[in-house]
Each structure stands twice: as structure tokens, then as C-alpha cells.
Amino acid sequence: MQCTRSYINNQNYTGTHSISGCWVEIANTTIQNTATVNVHANKGVALKTGFWAKAGSNVSITAGGSSTLLSTESSILEEQLTQEVSDQKFNFDVYPNPNDGNFTVSLKVADMQPYSVEIFNSSGLLVIRAHCDAKQLTFNRSDLPRGIYYVKVTIGANTATKKVIVK
Image (tube, rainbow, N blue to C red; front, top):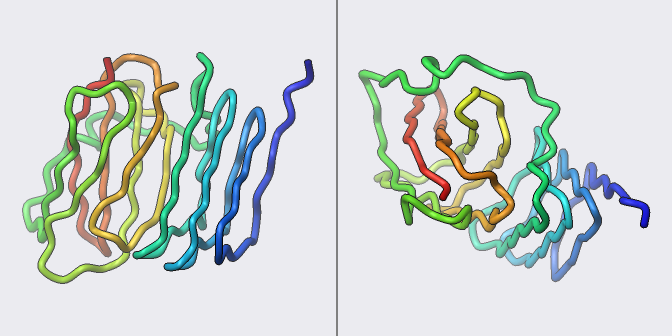
């Protein structure tokens, strides 16, 4: 059976949509505040530069099978991820922690602004990138291999990083 790759690029989703494939890669795509988008991939999902889920949207991303997330991003050094920012203007929680790859990132901010979430494995390889302007972003990634991951949240010039364990 052939594994097909679904490329989603330069889309603006409103309404309800389902995206599926063996591998799914989404770039330069906006999910509007009233949209519901369900993404399912047998092997992996890659959220690339320009993916944006607006506040009020409902996005579900599920990847099954034993393969890891497709990522063509370059690796970064682990110490860069764990460095604390002295003038941090926000905080966030990742729960549950530890988890099975299904977890929520919840921001604690007074003034909500668009932000990015990047998740790196213990080798420093970027495995997930998403942009959002809602206070919570849920990931359904039971295909993530067991291990330690770093969740990096960036709002403007401010960055915070937390460790999360997938068991």
C-alpha cells in the first residue's frame, strides 16, 4: 500500500474541513475563528511556517502509527531551550505532565497576543511548530516517541520554555 503525502499550503479555512493522509504537511495556512479543522495522518503531521489557528477556531490534530513527526527544520542546541529569560512577561503551563503525547499548553497572560509554540525533542530537533492567539492550544500526538521534550512559547520578543515528559 502506497503512503501518500498531503500538502496543504496557502489556505484560508472557514467552516468545517477534514484533512487526511499518510503524512500531512500544513504551511502558510490560516484557520479562521469560526472554523473547525480535523487533521488525521497515519504516520505524521508537520505544522510548518505560516500555520495559524485563530482564537475561537477548533483544530484537532491526530497522528497514528509508530513513526515520528515529519520535520525538515534544523536542530538547535538544548541549552538554548532551557535558558531562562530574565524579563519574562508571561508564564504558561503544560498539562498533563507527564503525558502520552496528548497535552495542552495554557498561557497565563494579562494581555492576550498571538504567540508561537515550538516543541523540541531531547536532541534539539524541532518536531512541532504552531501559531495561535487563544489562551489554550491542545495537541493530540500519541505518536510521539517516549522521552523528554521542550515546549518553547514565544510572544513578541519574550520566550519561556518548559520541559514535558511523554511516557
